[in-house]
Each structure stands twice: as C-alpha cells, then as structure tokens.
Length: 347
Image (cartoon, rainbow, N blue to C red):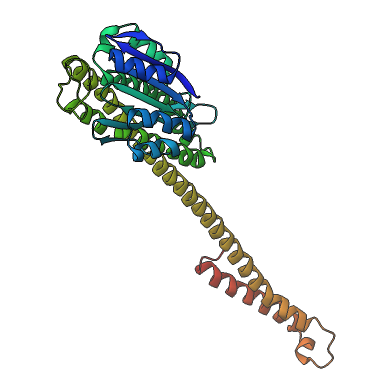
C-alpha cells in the first residue's frame, strides 16, 4: 500500500492506527479528523479508500488518471481540490510541476500526490505542533496544504525573475541565442501562470464557505467557518494574488523583451541594408568613372588604330599636316568626351 502516513486527530491530538481498517474504526468510535496521505497509489488502492469514505466516482477517476487542471469541485459534502505545486530547475531553466489531489470531507482529508512536492511531512509536523489548528477541522488541513504550495512558488518566481534579468542583459549584448531563450522561458512562465491563477478563485470559494466547519470541527453545509481560519485563508489568498501578479509581470516583461529583440534585429538589418546600399552607390560611381575613361580613350584609340595602319591608299597621310591633323583629331575627340562626362558628373 502506498500510504505515506495516516492518522486520526481527536481534539487535535494524533493517534496512529496500524492499518487503514483501524483508522476507519478509530474514526467511527472516537470521532475527530482522519488524514490519509497517499503517494502515487494504484487504482485499486485509491478505490479502496474511496469506497470507505464514499468518495464520488468522478473525483476518484480524476485522481486515478491525474493530469488535471487546478480546480475545486464539490460533491455533496466532499470537496475535491487539485493544485499544482512547482519547483524551478535553474540549470535547465524549467518549472517542474507536481500534482496534489485532496478530498476534504466532514471528518477526513485524503491527499493523493504524484510528486514529492509539496512537502506534506512538513505540513503535518507544523499542524501537529499546534493542536489548536487541527481542532478547526479538515479545512484547516486543506489551508495548510495550500499555504505550503503557495510558499513553494516563491523560489520559482525568484528563479524566473533572475533569468528574465539575464535576458534583458543579453538583449543589448546582441546575443544571437536570446530569442530562443525568450521563447522557452515564456513557455515555462505560461505553464506556471496556469497553475497559479486558479488558486485565487479556489481560496475565495473556501473563504466564502464552499466548505464549512461545524462547532465540533466537522465539515458540512450547516456549520460555520472559524473566524481565524477565514483570516488564514485570506492571508494565503493575498499571497496567491501577489504571486499571480508577479507571474503576469514576468510574462509581460518577456513579451516586451521579444518586441525589443525584434526591434534590435530590424535595426541591425536596416543598418546592414544601408551599408550595402552605400557600397552599391560607391561601386556604381566607380563603374561610371571607369566607363567614362574607357569612352574617352576609345575615340583616340579608334583614330590611332585607323591612321596607324600601313595603308598605301590614304592620301591625307602624305600631306604635310596629315599626321598632325590625325593627332589633333584624337585630342579634340578626347577633350569633347571629357567635357561631356565631366558635366554629367561621371568623373
């Protein structure tokens, strides 16, 4: 049997029956509140406990298959609560989620865990150290469990915030891997957001009396919720709201970081395009100059190539001023082309 601990608290004092059967018998004989903690129970084990306490089949089905969203459901006089404790793996930059199911009835609490978190042993020790808390009934145990879950969210928030601060530094260092890190961290923050946000509504429902404790500590529709317990639930609610606000802030910061990163990448691309445009303009200027000088030199070269041939039938070359005229023609063409290209600002 995957029972981590089971006890019956009579007037806030612990008695530890040796078996589940003895637990049920002690509860019937002496009253009080039973608390059974199960860690990854099999379906048969959970159904055996469910049959003894009359748990609703739908709630049991959810606990058997796990992977449920955070919620609070009421089945007659039993409340079924699902919460997701979390811890942050800093090296992998991941949030590791557990799953805690709690059945809270008139005189019992059954907790079903799928991970080591939350530390139910620490919760039990804290309650047993102050019997007054256990005298307030099953809702007091549920309050302590929810308080532990919310307290364990604080290191997760600290780890996420530290990584967001590092991302802000990376942005302006132009780290090429920062966009991938932003996306991956955003995924963890969103998952954490899904775990945190439903808790506020659940705590409000408990505070308003979704589960009530009677004068003798029994939970039921006809009792009244202890004033101190109401205050304690309100305190956990305040912590939860602050936690939810910080998660929302982290998600906003990551969204802004992604926007800034996109802007910086756009600026880099614009600068690169401007640089390439300037290079293209300079290359075009050089090409114009080269083309202009090639055109200027082409005309004299053409004249020289014609009149420099050994043709016998070119009578003008036998004139006294034949060759000077050819040279003058070459120079005149070169000057004319130079002035044309200079005026066109190609030189």
